[in-house]
Length: 247
Image (cartoon, rainbow, N blue to C red):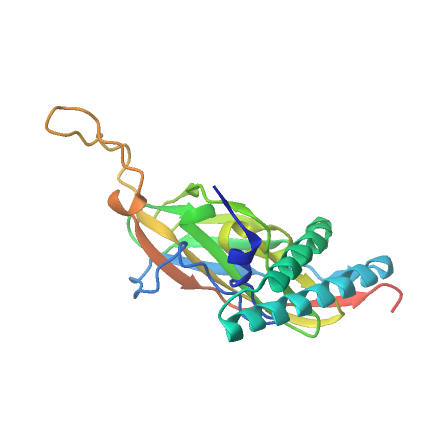
């Protein structure tokens, strides 16, 4: 099954604003206290190349159009054929933007502050990194193309008591399945903050499979039925500087 762009466009965020989070990724109920602490490490300063400035300004214009279409859809409460066509055209024009490389890779340190080992299902449909970037040229490009509606569990990240694991967030990608992305389009000072949502549980090692009354193994697909619970953790803010080539 493929989800069309018209359904995904309603999830798009505004320029420089907080990205919306997909309901299927994480519930809105209260979250339990988490033993996992999230620490962002400051990224290296970057320099915008002169040849890339025009590309980045084009990204700003596309996101502005995306914002207008999303606002019109919310205000009207429906999609007419012309607006659907505009959305599909916008999704096509956005395709080359995902190939732009800025080299802004965040290092995220996950620390288990508890006394027992834990497992975090990281990414895909069982978790997400939602980034907020503040600065004069911060642009949040929300993916509005088609997307398979299959279920994709994240990869398990095991963390020992008092231990840490470091993960990389490449090119400021974030949101559901890392489909959204922040671009830095102008020089200046920037601040980044992260909200990590995901499923975790206490790591009890290899557990015996569950069986029904006939002795057959019960295959459990839903992590929530296998001891996992949702957590949501906010990181520290980090700042970095962006300069422009030749200035």
